Image (cartoon, rainbow, N blue to C red; front, side, top):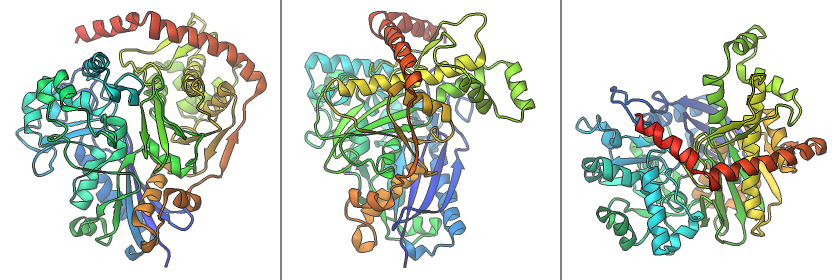
Length: 554
């Protein structure tokens, strides 16, 4: 009898579920459930207004993914439920929610639903920047060792700054919360009935490591006295490594999902990180770009050291037994979508319509006719702040060189190029510390949609880029972790490396650089570095000041 696992990929705007053959990684069925409430950025569903830089979600949307997409893939495939041996989950992170003693999100309760802080804070909720700055400043003053794990600076996207924002702005919600929990761990708890936290989510987003645990009570107290016991109270729970079994599917959930109770549920992993085994990049020197609304870069390495601007370096973080680094860019697909939705002139949209093309393809086609440097533009890829290497959420986007003759496709291409330049800056931060990068992989939603984008990356990086042909590569990665959680006795595997050797999708397209384009991009990249350091280092007060004025006008 063939064996299958289910991979559930919780992204920013939808959840994707795949049913995968454990023997070869082939996809038996897939289904996508868009989040009904989407990203809540302006007001709660009941009309309560939100401030700038907020990004919330409705946890019921996450349950909808389970109850709609899991039964649907079983129905589509015709696979007998006895053949399914495990479920794997990946999730955006840090996506944080406060829950009560019964594990219910506070926003489900009538008493708290009008409080914005009772809702899920999505990964790109950046309104906790002040709290992140306070954590960084005090950690620097105290010379806290944990700071080295995150490249010397803490991000507003992470758990403790978000939790501190709740404490400062709505103490009643902080007190009402029995736990603050990553949404991925909450889904695991819904499936298994057990509170198990992921070492991956905790290690990269919650100041935790498997040696010392959470930060010391004295450090937390120095940030805010009310945080002193947070690690023992608000963040309590067993922490398990990725590729381990978090628990088994309960009878109640099995009935709703049309599966057998008792099958393995793997420990949750960050969505982008699930792409690493899915493309077979489980060895040192392999660099994976998971490209979607943002880009997350993961590097498997043999040594652990302090690097500028890393989002985290965690032992056993992605591949058990290996050192795994994470860096990232907070706006990639999001930046392209912003330009399309807010800035493209009507005449371009009309021309695209008359040609029977969507506006993305239209701009890509026109931008592809341009030579590197032809537009005279250089852009900064900080439209949602800078995650790496500057780790500064106060920074913002910029386009340099605009004039009255600038065309929409020229701006579009400059935005594509800016993300490639940002990635090269990240790669150089590793290489400057003698950490080798031998192979580069690209996965996620963008690489297969935008050929021009990937050619630009190859030209800017001067390297081949391997693009997997898997349709739902991140969900496939979760299915691989599920196969390891189930183990060989149940028809799975006993190591991630073994599972990836059978299930990963390593075939696909290889994009090679154009030597002629790379020569021009080398010049443009030097201009990028000048602008990067001017606005990001020597004169960062320009963007900081503009953001402060923007907030003052709320």
